[in-house]
Length: 159
Image (cartoon, rainbow, N blue to C red; front, side, top):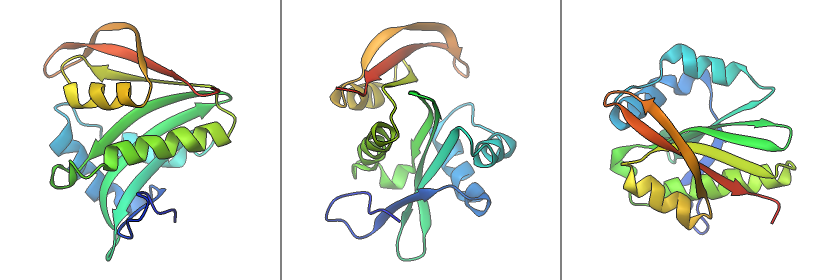
């Protein structure tokens, strides 16, 4: 299991498992107004051909504190969901997860990464811009509860 934060011996990343779902759903519910269902997460776990659901665990005890789900289809990567438990925000886990999947995607030959983000999600926008993502467009009424447009952001990986 790779150490997620350099010099940090408590946080590790690994593939999401079925037994992680209660913790993942708790983080999802605390993080989003329109949370994914267990079946959606289960589908991501089972879709091993393109889906990469990853969790960050804290030791001791393997407590799930964050997760990211992304798809890789040939050289394109789509980041579908990213969340950190509110008690662990501000520790750099979101940035570490994103840097991890960017590096893994490059290693796997991906050249382009995209994601959608609520226009009002300033912390996420700041992070994605810091990582080199650029706003490419807008998806009207992409989010619900409340209704909001999304920015489509992209990062060229082969640079």
